[in-house]
Length: 295
View (cartoon, one colour):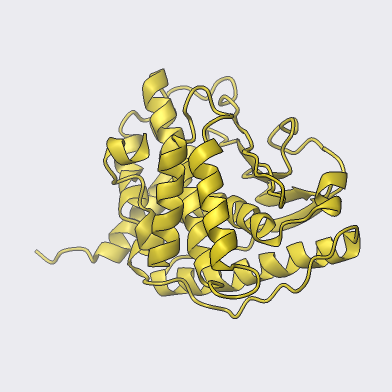
Protein backbone atom coordinates (compact mmCIF):
# COMPACT_ATOMS: atom_id res chain seq x y z
CA UNK A 1 0.00 0.00 0.00
CA UNK A 2 1.31 3.45 -0.87
CA UNK A 3 1.77 5.73 2.13
CA UNK A 4 0.24 9.22 2.22
CA UNK A 5 2.91 11.97 1.98
CA UNK A 6 3.45 13.62 5.34
CA UNK A 7 2.66 17.13 4.01
CA UNK A 8 -0.68 16.03 2.58
CA UNK A 9 -1.52 14.17 5.79
CA UNK A 10 -0.89 17.28 7.88
CA UNK A 11 -2.98 19.37 5.48
CA UNK A 12 -5.84 16.86 5.84
CA UNK A 13 -5.55 16.95 9.62
CA UNK A 14 -5.63 20.75 9.51
CA UNK A 15 -8.79 20.74 7.40
CA UNK A 16 -10.54 18.26 9.69
CA UNK A 17 -9.55 20.23 12.75
CA UNK A 18 -10.83 23.49 11.26
CA UNK A 19 -14.22 21.92 10.55
CA UNK A 20 -14.46 20.47 14.04
CA UNK A 21 -13.56 23.76 15.67
CA UNK A 22 -16.05 25.81 13.66
CA UNK A 23 -18.79 24.96 16.15
CA UNK A 24 -16.66 25.98 19.07
CA UNK A 25 -16.37 29.64 17.98
CA UNK A 26 -12.81 30.18 19.07
CA UNK A 27 -12.32 33.48 20.86
CA UNK A 28 -8.89 34.29 22.21
CA UNK A 29 -7.38 37.51 23.44
CA UNK A 30 -3.72 37.84 24.18
CA UNK A 31 -2.11 41.06 25.23
CA UNK A 32 1.28 42.39 26.21
CA UNK A 33 2.45 45.79 27.31
CA UNK A 34 5.00 47.63 25.20
CA UNK A 35 8.43 48.36 26.56
CA UNK A 36 10.05 51.68 27.35
CA UNK A 37 13.63 52.68 27.93
CA UNK A 38 13.02 53.06 31.67
CA UNK A 39 11.46 49.67 32.26
CA UNK A 40 9.58 46.75 30.79
CA UNK A 41 6.16 45.49 31.74
CA UNK A 42 4.27 42.31 31.01
CA UNK A 43 0.70 42.24 29.78
CA UNK A 44 -2.29 39.97 30.28
CA UNK A 45 -4.03 37.04 28.70
CA UNK A 46 -7.77 36.53 28.74
CA UNK A 47 -9.47 33.51 27.20
CA UNK A 48 -13.23 33.61 26.88
CA UNK A 49 -15.31 30.49 27.42
CA UNK A 50 -16.92 28.79 24.41
CA UNK A 51 -20.47 29.97 23.73
CA UNK A 52 -23.42 28.15 25.24
CA UNK A 53 -24.41 25.07 23.32
CA UNK A 54 -20.93 24.33 22.08
CA UNK A 55 -20.78 20.99 23.83
CA UNK A 56 -20.63 17.60 22.20
CA UNK A 57 -17.13 18.10 20.85
CA UNK A 58 -15.19 15.13 19.64
CA UNK A 59 -13.00 14.09 22.59
CA UNK A 60 -10.41 12.78 20.13
CA UNK A 61 -9.88 16.30 18.76
CA UNK A 62 -6.85 17.20 20.93
CA UNK A 63 -5.01 14.09 19.74
CA UNK A 64 -6.18 14.64 16.16
CA UNK A 65 -4.72 18.13 15.98
CA UNK A 66 -1.70 17.70 18.22
CA UNK A 67 0.57 17.13 15.24
CA UNK A 68 -0.24 20.64 14.00
CA UNK A 69 1.41 22.00 17.13
CA UNK A 70 4.21 19.51 17.77
CA UNK A 71 5.25 18.84 14.18
CA UNK A 72 4.32 21.99 12.25
CA UNK A 73 5.89 22.31 8.84
CA UNK A 74 7.15 25.72 9.99
CA UNK A 75 9.66 23.99 12.25
CA UNK A 76 11.48 22.60 9.21
CA UNK A 77 11.88 25.86 7.28
CA UNK A 78 15.25 26.94 8.68
CA UNK A 79 16.19 30.48 9.64
CA UNK A 80 13.65 33.24 9.26
CA UNK A 81 14.23 35.30 6.13
CA UNK A 82 16.14 38.53 6.61
CA UNK A 83 14.03 41.13 4.82
CA UNK A 84 16.44 43.98 5.59
CA UNK A 85 13.99 45.53 7.99
CA UNK A 86 14.78 49.14 8.73
CA UNK A 87 11.78 50.87 10.37
CA UNK A 88 13.65 54.13 10.86
CA UNK A 89 13.92 56.53 13.75
CA UNK A 90 11.42 56.84 16.59
CA UNK A 91 11.78 60.29 18.12
CA UNK A 92 9.86 61.19 21.26
CA UNK A 93 6.57 63.09 21.12
CA UNK A 94 5.86 62.30 17.46
CA UNK A 95 2.69 60.29 16.94
CA UNK A 96 3.30 60.40 13.18
CA UNK A 97 6.72 58.79 13.59
CA UNK A 98 5.26 56.22 16.00
CA UNK A 99 2.54 55.20 13.55
CA UNK A 100 5.06 54.99 10.72
CA UNK A 101 7.38 52.86 12.86
CA UNK A 102 4.65 50.38 13.86
CA UNK A 103 3.47 50.08 10.26
CA UNK A 104 6.97 49.45 8.94
CA UNK A 105 7.75 46.80 11.56
CA UNK A 106 4.47 45.04 10.77
CA UNK A 107 5.27 45.16 7.05
CA UNK A 108 8.63 43.54 7.79
CA UNK A 109 6.89 40.81 9.78
CA UNK A 110 4.48 40.23 6.89
CA UNK A 111 7.34 39.82 4.42
CA UNK A 112 9.45 37.56 6.63
CA UNK A 113 6.67 35.24 7.76
CA UNK A 114 5.04 35.22 4.33
CA UNK A 115 8.25 33.77 2.90
CA UNK A 116 8.49 31.28 5.75
CA UNK A 117 4.94 30.01 5.23
CA UNK A 118 5.68 29.64 1.52
CA UNK A 119 8.68 27.46 2.36
CA UNK A 120 6.48 25.37 4.63
CA UNK A 121 3.79 24.96 1.99
CA UNK A 122 1.23 26.62 4.27
CA UNK A 123 -1.33 29.27 3.44
CA UNK A 124 -0.35 32.70 4.74
CA UNK A 125 -2.64 35.58 5.63
CA UNK A 126 -1.58 38.96 6.95
CA UNK A 127 -3.03 40.24 10.21
CA UNK A 128 -4.65 43.64 10.38
CA UNK A 129 -2.90 46.39 12.30
CA UNK A 130 -5.01 48.91 14.17
CA UNK A 131 -3.22 51.77 15.90
CA UNK A 132 -5.23 53.44 18.64
CA UNK A 133 -4.72 56.20 21.21
CA UNK A 134 -7.07 54.89 23.90
CA UNK A 135 -8.38 51.57 25.16
CA UNK A 136 -11.13 50.13 23.01
CA UNK A 137 -13.19 46.94 23.18
CA UNK A 138 -12.27 44.33 20.58
CA UNK A 139 -14.36 41.50 19.12
CA UNK A 140 -12.58 39.31 21.66
CA UNK A 141 -13.83 41.33 24.63
CA UNK A 142 -12.92 44.26 26.85
CA UNK A 143 -9.42 45.75 26.68
CA UNK A 144 -7.03 44.37 29.26
CA UNK A 145 -6.13 47.00 31.86
CA UNK A 146 -2.61 48.32 31.40
CA UNK A 147 -2.02 46.59 28.07
CA UNK A 148 -0.49 48.48 25.16
CA UNK A 149 -0.80 45.67 22.63
CA UNK A 150 -3.46 43.04 21.94
CA UNK A 151 -3.93 40.35 19.32
CA UNK A 152 -7.53 39.32 18.76
CA UNK A 153 -7.97 36.08 16.86
CA UNK A 154 -11.62 36.76 16.02
CA UNK A 155 -10.78 39.57 13.59
CA UNK A 156 -7.09 38.63 13.27
CA UNK A 157 -6.05 42.11 14.29
CA UNK A 158 -3.08 43.43 16.23
CA UNK A 159 -4.18 46.43 18.29
CA UNK A 160 -1.35 48.76 19.30
CA UNK A 161 -2.03 51.68 21.60
CA UNK A 162 0.05 54.85 21.53
CA UNK A 163 -0.26 56.48 24.92
CA UNK A 164 1.45 59.43 26.55
CA UNK A 165 4.11 57.24 28.17
CA UNK A 166 5.03 55.65 24.85
CA UNK A 167 5.26 59.01 23.12
CA UNK A 168 7.32 60.52 25.91
CA UNK A 169 9.88 57.74 26.21
CA UNK A 170 9.83 55.23 23.33
CA UNK A 171 12.11 52.19 23.29
CA UNK A 172 12.25 51.04 19.64
CA UNK A 173 13.58 47.53 20.38
CA UNK A 174 10.94 46.94 23.04
CA UNK A 175 8.14 48.19 20.84
CA UNK A 176 9.32 45.96 17.98
CA UNK A 177 9.51 42.99 20.34
CA UNK A 178 5.92 43.57 21.43
CA UNK A 179 4.58 43.76 17.87
CA UNK A 180 6.55 40.62 16.98
CA UNK A 181 5.15 38.82 20.05
CA UNK A 182 1.56 39.63 19.12
CA UNK A 183 2.41 38.61 15.56
CA UNK A 184 3.64 35.32 17.00
CA UNK A 185 0.11 34.65 18.23
CA UNK A 186 -1.13 35.34 14.70
CA UNK A 187 1.34 32.76 13.42
CA UNK A 188 -0.06 30.26 15.91
CA UNK A 189 -3.57 31.09 14.74
CA UNK A 190 -3.12 30.74 10.98
CA UNK A 191 -0.80 27.71 11.19
CA UNK A 192 -3.34 25.66 13.17
CA UNK A 193 -1.29 25.56 16.36
CA UNK A 194 -3.92 27.48 18.29
CA UNK A 195 -6.56 25.05 17.10
CA UNK A 196 -4.85 22.34 19.11
CA UNK A 197 -4.35 24.73 22.03
CA UNK A 198 -8.05 25.53 22.27
CA UNK A 199 -9.17 21.93 21.79
CA UNK A 200 -6.72 20.65 24.41
CA UNK A 201 -7.99 23.19 26.95
CA UNK A 202 -11.50 21.79 26.74
CA UNK A 203 -12.11 19.66 29.79
CA UNK A 204 -8.55 20.09 31.07
CA UNK A 205 -7.88 20.73 34.75
CA UNK A 206 -6.31 23.95 36.01
CA UNK A 207 -2.75 22.64 36.00
CA UNK A 208 -3.07 21.48 32.40
CA UNK A 209 -4.61 24.78 31.30
CA UNK A 210 -1.73 26.71 32.85
CA UNK A 211 0.76 24.45 31.07
CA UNK A 212 -0.96 25.00 27.74
CA UNK A 213 -0.98 28.75 28.34
CA UNK A 214 2.74 28.70 29.05
CA UNK A 215 3.37 26.73 25.86
CA UNK A 216 1.49 29.36 23.87
CA UNK A 217 3.06 32.42 25.47
CA UNK A 218 6.61 31.09 25.51
CA UNK A 219 6.34 30.11 21.86
CA UNK A 220 5.09 33.57 20.91
CA UNK A 221 8.00 35.15 22.78
CA UNK A 222 10.45 32.77 21.08
CA UNK A 223 8.98 33.59 17.66
CA UNK A 224 9.33 37.27 18.50
CA UNK A 225 13.01 36.74 19.30
CA UNK A 226 13.48 34.85 16.03
CA UNK A 227 12.30 37.93 14.15
CA UNK A 228 14.43 40.25 16.27
CA UNK A 229 17.48 38.13 15.42
CA UNK A 230 17.16 39.12 11.75
CA UNK A 231 18.10 42.68 12.81
CA UNK A 232 20.94 41.71 15.13
CA UNK A 233 23.76 44.23 15.05
CA UNK A 234 21.64 47.01 13.59
CA UNK A 235 20.91 50.28 15.42
CA UNK A 236 17.52 48.83 16.39
CA UNK A 237 18.88 45.63 17.96
CA UNK A 238 22.22 46.36 19.58
CA UNK A 239 23.89 43.77 21.78
CA UNK A 240 23.48 45.93 24.88
CA UNK A 241 19.77 46.67 24.32
CA UNK A 242 18.98 43.02 23.64
CA UNK A 243 20.92 41.88 26.72
CA UNK A 244 19.06 44.46 28.81
CA UNK A 245 15.69 43.26 27.51
CA UNK A 246 16.38 39.58 28.16
CA UNK A 247 17.77 40.35 31.61
CA UNK A 248 14.66 42.36 32.47
CA UNK A 249 12.43 39.43 31.58
CA UNK A 250 14.64 37.09 33.58
CA UNK A 251 14.20 39.25 36.68
CA UNK A 252 10.68 40.57 36.20
CA UNK A 253 8.90 38.55 33.52
CA UNK A 254 6.85 36.46 35.94
CA UNK A 255 5.92 39.14 38.45
CA UNK A 256 2.62 39.96 36.80
CA UNK A 257 1.52 36.32 36.61
CA UNK A 258 0.80 34.84 40.05
CA UNK A 259 -0.71 31.70 38.49
CA UNK A 260 2.36 31.14 36.31
CA UNK A 261 0.52 31.08 33.00
CA UNK A 262 3.42 32.73 31.12
CA UNK A 263 6.36 30.88 32.62
CA UNK A 264 8.95 31.88 35.19
CA UNK A 265 11.23 34.79 34.39
CA UNK A 266 14.20 32.54 33.76
CA UNK A 267 12.07 30.37 31.47
CA UNK A 268 10.90 33.36 29.44
CA UNK A 269 14.48 34.57 29.10
CA UNK A 270 15.62 31.10 28.05
CA UNK A 271 13.11 30.87 25.19
CA UNK A 272 13.91 34.42 24.10
CA UNK A 273 17.59 33.53 23.99
CA UNK A 274 16.91 30.25 22.20
CA UNK A 275 14.89 31.94 19.46
CA UNK A 276 17.37 34.78 19.04
CA UNK A 277 20.42 32.53 18.84
CA UNK A 278 18.95 29.92 16.50
CA UNK A 279 16.97 32.32 14.33
CA UNK A 280 14.28 29.92 13.07
CA UNK A 281 10.82 28.76 14.17
CA UNK A 282 12.20 25.27 14.70
CA UNK A 283 13.72 26.61 17.92
CA UNK A 284 10.27 27.48 19.25
CA UNK A 285 8.51 24.13 19.48
CA UNK A 286 7.30 24.49 23.05
CA UNK A 287 4.56 21.91 22.42
CA UNK A 288 7.05 19.07 22.13
CA UNK A 289 9.38 20.38 24.85
CA UNK A 290 9.58 18.83 28.28
CA UNK A 291 7.32 20.39 30.93
CA UNK A 292 10.47 21.26 32.88
CA UNK A 293 11.61 23.64 30.13
CA UNK A 294 8.22 25.37 30.01
CA UNK A 295 7.49 25.73 33.71
